[in-house]
Length: 305
Image (tube, rainbow, N blue to C red):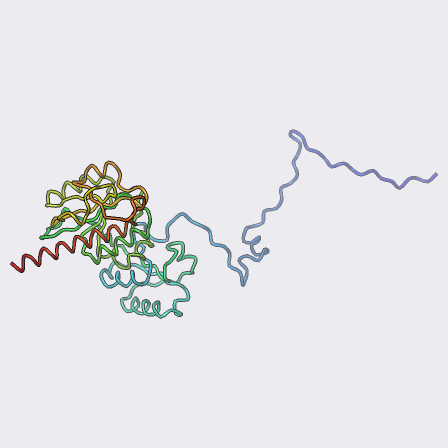
């Protein structure tokens, strides 16, 4: 009788309790795994590790946009520590002129990718500068002349609005702007870009409480007027004093109750529809323009006498 060639399959060994475990898989270094996968090999760039550490000190201002950077170089060139330019900067006439100016002033220039610059500012125009100059509105150290013009923004959160306000403030001769520390946009790269150099001429004070600053400025002869569409008196029906603080509210909320209480008076800008409101940068421009108009008119009357 022939023996059967059938052999039963062996069941896998199971390990229980203190029974020996199967040997671990051999460790393959990450660099070797990346190389096998085509990452880090010739023709491929390994993805850089993300780090929470900022590229440069957080105290440095980020100034984006060619116009803003050129104004920074014109006014505070010694404060510029480094300028990042897009890697294809040679294709742009504005960037070529900027780099030539930076090389002339012996300021450090670094090339960065489009994505790296967009991490700092979405619309950077191909360049972002870093300045170590802190432009703080030190109103208590100022000596005021006949006129004084200050803005206080009660919680503006949009970078484009703050940038537009600072640009207008520069051209209208505003001495300084007061904004809160919390729940308000600061001097971001986007704000510098929209302001087109206005930040270099209009210092900012960040303070959550407006009252102490207002009280000090009142001692120097300032009056505080809050803009509110609910006010009965129009800005065009009042006599604007020689020293004035215009207080404007946030985009959708307007002035906060505590801020309204510390204003000397609330005034409005006439509008066709009571259910709508002006953009905060437009309100600032209208208030500043009317202030300048009245001051100029008064000065002409004095001269004519």
